[in-house]
Amino acid sequence: MAPSAPAAEYEKEIRALYRERNERTFGQPHKSHGGVGRRLVDFTALLVLIGTVSVAASISVYNWLVPTGLFITAEQRLYPTMAQPELADDFVKQLAGSAATVFAARSVKANASLSEQSYLANEALGQALVLSSDGWLVTTQAVVAEASDDYVVVPADGRVYQVTAVALDPAAPLAYLKIANRNLTAIPFAAVNELTVNTPVVAIVGESQSTARSWYLRYLANMGARTPLVGRAELPVASESLPDRFLLDQALPAGSKGAPIVSLQGKVVGLAADYGGVVRGVVPLANLSPVMETLFAEQAARRPLIGLTYVQSTWLLTPSSPGAAGAVLTSAARRAAVVSNSPAAKAGLKEGDSIVAIDNEPLNYLSLSFMLQRYRPGATVELTVERAGKEQKVKVTLGEVEGESNQIKTE
Image 1 (tube, rainbow, N blue to C red):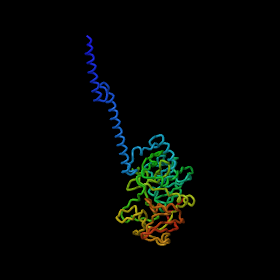
Image 2: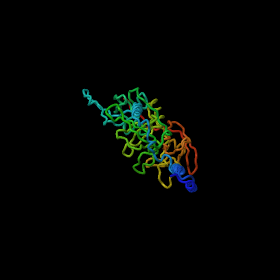
Image 3: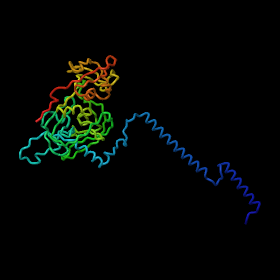
Image 4: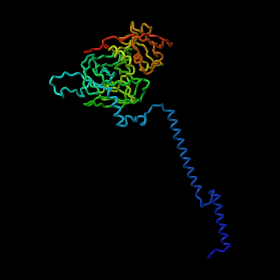
């Protein structure tokens, strides 16, 4: 039965009152849920905004507090060239032509079998780097210790070549070899300013019983190291020796002494060397060009002489260490701070002087010896010297290191 007219009007009034109450309470009619949905969306947006601001603030604080380069991320250590096998193989093949393996020469009987004539990988003395296409190579004196021709070299072509000449470097722990091969591949050297800690490098090592070579990816962990010391007496060094070493983050196999250490730009950094009983050191080769010029032209390894004994201030850990980086002239057990009649003595240098720059280039983590090797004998250099708290300029004309170490023995 349909409701009477008064009852229907009464029901309309009741519904109107409910709608009015809902609108006052919820801001809109009771049947509409749009307000709750909008609140949920607004609340979610607020959370996202707070999260974004928090992350941005955390990154800003981290970058402010933590020095750049302190940590190495996974992305920084991933280099596409070496991560992809086909690219790595091509890269190593390009470098393999500049590497060689060194053996002690063997006397073989006339009717010896092929196996008796063979040189085995575990007999290798070490590795070497090609310096010129016409047969000059360089290795460390840990591989070739004598100026004799009792060595053979196996380059990338797999043939065995008798060494015809050897020169021992009078300043750096290097040995230069000559073989009769005019088809070798030489690659350029990396400048020191192209290298930093965490620079990725590749060691090329011939360790398998074939012409193939293995490669090892490493990172430069330290560029300011020096040769390890046995005692305090070894702290002062002669200006005609090269104590500088770079360090790798991990050691290489024992057979990799003398192996070329190459950047991913295909430039030579140095040669692998022993450091603390493992092959982790690198003898830097950035200043080898002046020696190569005289080696190729005159068949002599010539190095400049200044005649000083010094301690690099960056090697010192004492309360009275000098403030500025430099080379402090000091005497050693068997050598004066300024050698008598040397170029340094003629220029008026004295014990206690601190050399802080050469030709206005500061001595930072690199040693005085390393900086001097940029020059040929006979060159004149300007030293910035601190004496009694005052700075002055001193010009020195370099001499030449003499002795048997720069003489070549040939067949």
